[in-house]
Length: 311
Ligand code: MTE
Image (cartoon, rainbow, N blue to C red; front, side, top):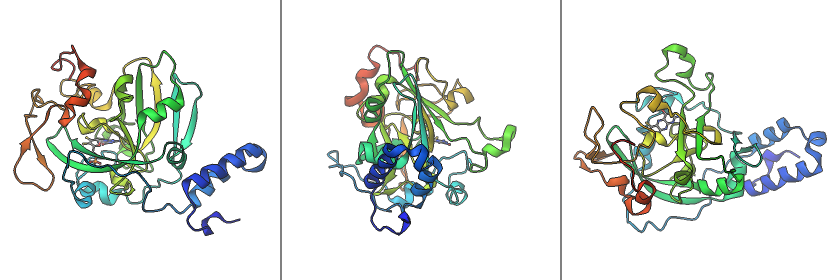
């Protein structure tokens, strides 16, 4: 049977097929590399099946072209446009994400298995980069709490740590060693209650299609009330941990970037104001909203905290 000849095979069907092989005793019958090959042969549908976002706030979307041609992906380049070309050979299928730390059972899942297990929905979110630009993007994925429920973190799990893949053959800036723009692998973290918040999202697509390499294919984090650098791309590892992870930008420059990175127009970056932002495609600036417009939903997470200190 040559799976690549089967038309319209769904991720669910593949997931079931894999389970079936595993039940039969995968070790004896099908090696895990053979399963990986089956996954790699699977023609990934360009269009994803998902529950659409009703867009109750009537947000106006940026265009797909805007969101996919102006990016931050330092593993390829510090330039906003260069990663588009440089990332096109990135091999994103199959792609396993390791899941570990303070959880019931350490394991790894292929992106297709995440989709089969947790389903897909659309989330139209504002996205605000710490540099002062913003966009509105329809992401496709699932809320992170679904994955956390499945992983069953134990009582030591106070934070979730995320790590981007480390593969200098794939990412040219990682190959530069001490001359790299930043230290790799890129790391981010969330407090457990932030990670479990219903807005916190794992994306595998945007604008109805799979993520393009430059936007963090095949799987990334999206945290809409935090500056964009928290939304780590091309995930390799997700761990539940006891201690607050030292995130990449905080390690890079702790005076300028903290752990929380909540969008806050009242707390300026040491080198520029955060009161305003430029929406991609617009010439004039607009006001930046507290928690990027998600104050009603998330302010209670930070009750009693000095947001100037925990920036
Ligand atoms: N993740 C990784 N691994 N490497 C990066 O350079 N840049 C971050 C974040 N995630 C980055 C990353 C920053 S600064 C921003 S603003 C967003 O990705 C940009 O996401 P986008 O390029 O899809 O708009």
